[in-house]
Amino acid sequence: MEHGFWDNLKKPVIGLAPMDGVTDPAFRYMVASAGKPSVIFTEFVNVEGLARGAEKMMPGFFYSKKEHPIVAQLFGTEVDSFYKVAVLLCYLGFDGIDINMGCPVNKIASKGSGAALIRNPKLAKKIIQSVKKGIDDFANGISLENAGIHENIISFIKKNKNKFGGKDGIVLKNSDRKIIPLSVKTRIGYSEICAEEWAKSLISFGVKILTMHGRTLKQLYSGEANWEVLGKVAKICKKKGVIFLGNGDISSLDEANGKIKKYGCDGVLIGRATNGNPWFFGGKEPSVKNRLSIVKKHVKYFEKLAYLPFQTLKKHLAWYTKGFEGAKEMRMEFMQAQSGKDIDRIIEEFSQKIK
Image 1 (cartoon, rainbow, N blue to C red):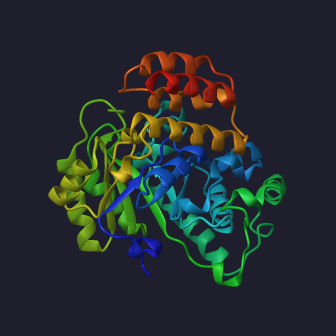
Image 2: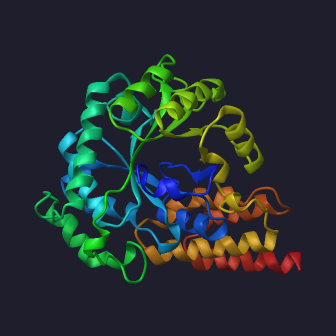
Image 3: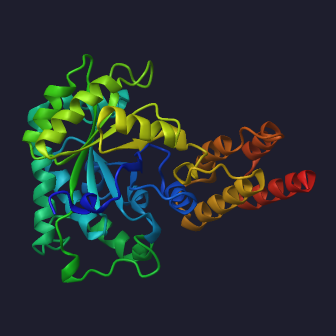
């Protein structure tokens, strides 16, 4: 299969976009549980840190069986580090690997990664080739040790293997040594729009699955996503047999389907519209009671993973508490909570009032 698992997805593809600080394992689990998207992406993780043995980054790759197909996203600039982490992700059972060439945040782009790669096609090409080699070498049987994976990372995997794919964890058979697809997520330009030329370059580097956000790096997330430009890129990709996903400013499933049809994309990735809304892909708004039940499940799963401080959950709790009577008061209480027990108590007290 030229595109790996992508060829088997029901069309059009409507997936969960990678979002830094948002698409963590607990949120992804809730999205997969509350309304299954076509495909799920992790947050981006830095290849240089992983290559040097920063095991504290590894929990970002925890995933449950129900999240399949799941694609791990990477960022960085070191070609050799991309190779090592590509082998690692294949070993962990991910369905695909995505290279972030679109992050506009200054601390990322200023170091030459993320959207800065739009201005450095030579490095982008080397990174793509390096990831492909890592995928190929894994399929041909290379071990983590021989691929140069740091001993800290190998040790972490052994201790936490049941957190990569469920209770049975990593059980690697020869039949699992397959070539998984590589994809790239990028933007329509750096300071100026160069989407068509950039897409052609990526395709010439061997990219078969491409997601493009309809803003330049300079725009960050201001203004409107330029879907007219994305439509032009969709035509280029179609001629070359490349799967193309549009991204930017989609707030509903109806809007997603409308843009796919109008601009000729194979699908879209949805980001910010899912914040506090993991049921987005199910297309049905839950009752307040069901919403609070989802909040409790999210908190419980978050605490079960036990790798991030409770404070990092607060943004999700704030997003959940909007659009219903008493939401503001509940949100204020959630912001004071220190544990799942506090959340359960707050929800129980609120539920008494709405009976």
